[in-house]
Image (tube, one colour):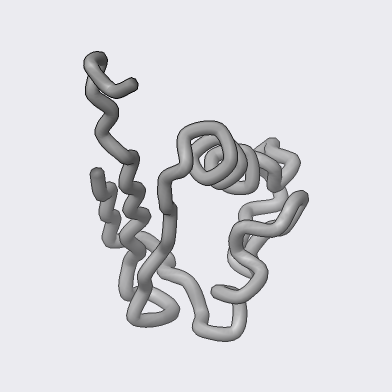
Length: 79
């Protein structure tokens, strides 16, 4: 599943810390509430809880962002 926007984008230097706990981007609005934990929790749930993958892509500031995640398929008949 992928979700894209045409918003402020993500600067390349922010990408390595994007999924860190309490990380907030340079462009985060200070008047908007948030602890910087949402993306971190999504990563924990997807990767540790469901053995999936999550990543972000952006061509840079003012270029929008795409967040993508994949989850493995499990069969009910799996032994």
